[in-house]
Structure formats: structure tokens, C-alpha cells
Amino acid sequence: HPTQAWRPETIPGRLLHLFAHGRFFLTDCDLVGRSKLFVSLRQQAQMLSRTFDEAPDGLPRLKSAAAFALAGFCLGDARHAALGLKRLGLEIDRQILPDGGHIGRSPQTLLEAYRVLAMVQETLDAERAPTDPRLRGALDRMAPMLRFFRMGDGALAVFHGGGESNSRTLEATLDSDDALGR
Image (cartoon, rainbow, N blue to C red):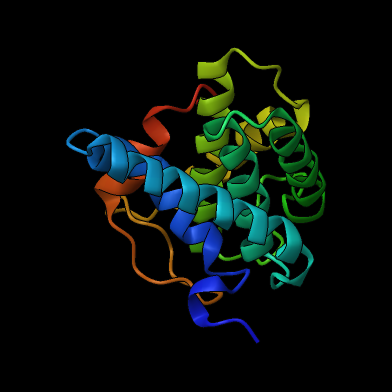
């Protein structure tokens, strides 16, 4: 069994955080440090490609597909990016319901899935890469569902294993949404 750091449900979270905050790390990083970071990213992406099917079903598998696609873009590997996007499309079909909810029905899980999918969409937009209609469609359905689950204080409803959320974080997440329906 791999150590906790190399488990298929751990690697995606680490990669997603690095992709979201990489500029913070790379701004003052020298050439040697930058090189080591990219070598590590390649190793983690390779491990993720080998262990993707072992990720627990649900949100961890969605995050694995998204992280693999983003790693492909970050590392300039078009084959990995395409494979990650293909896997992501399949997970969207399996996990994002026609009403925009996540199959687990947890508002917190829906928020996490939305944030990950929005990150992929932003990357595709920045790269001027074609978007899978399943990704755009999922985001367009998920945003109104997130708004539906908001309580009077602006935070998400707490049920199906979800925890309390920060209303400002939710508002910032939904600010980038084009589908303003409720």
C-alpha cells in the first residue's frame, strides 16, 4: 500500500492546491527550486495516471480527473490533458445530475465539485482550448443549485455530511458564474 502522501485520493488535492496557488511558490523560486517542483509535478501526475481507477468513487475521482487534466496543461503534455478531460467528462456524466446537484446530494460536496470544475474551465479559457460541452453544461446547472442551497445568512445548508461554509467564500465562488438563474 502506498504511503498516505501517494494515495490516489491525496495526490489530486495536493496538485489542485499547487495549481491554484502556484504563482505564490514560483514568484521567488530560483531555477533549481522551480525545476524540482516541476519534476515533482511530473512524478505526481504519472502516479495519478496509474492509480486513477483506485481513487474512491465520488468527489475524489472527480478531483483525480480534474487534477490529471490540469497537470497535462501545466506540464505541456497534450496527451495527458486530453486523457484527463476525457476522464473528467465521464465523471461529470456519472456525478453531476440533470438538476445540477451532485449525486451525493451534499451541498458541501457540490461546492467542492463546482470549484474544481470551474478551475478546469478557467484553464481551458486561458489556454483558448475547446471546452467539452459537458463541463460547461455542468457548471451552468450547478451554480443555480448552489444558490438554491444558500441559507438566509448566505452560507450553504448543512446536510448529507456537509459542514458549515463561509458565505463570503461561496459568494466569491459564484461571482465568476455566467448562469445567474436561481
